[in-house]
Image 1: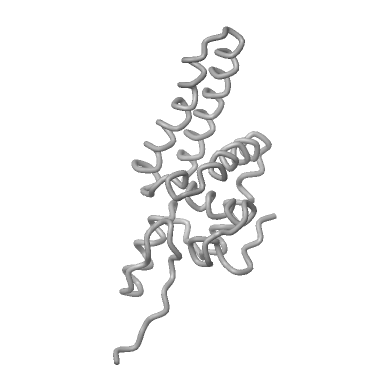
Image 2: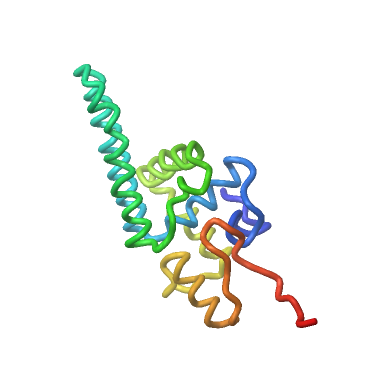
Length: 161
């Protein structure tokens, strides 16, 4: 189970300092089911091509295999999720590890409980499919612009001096 007692790390809580703290942040950047499906399909394709290339002793094909995962995944962040890939936020290895955790949790049908926990922690409405939807709605309701995708989302309002 995901520990969200302090909020979602990197969103409503301080930046993640460990992989276990990073996982809920990573998943918060993948709330749309299509984004997760594109990631899972790309990861499976990259692994299959990579293993086949190794067996066939095709080093160039092996070296290019990760592109099968990352090109569609990055595109899904910009077009579906409306955010920047977590890989670009300085945690490339944690992101890669999270890709495989997400794939495993999708295949074992356990991903929905994690997504529900994040949505519940953020108090997201059904109409808010992505973190971008949640941020836009909070901007409109509070009049306070929330920080970017890789920064804590909530600020303390400063009184006018």
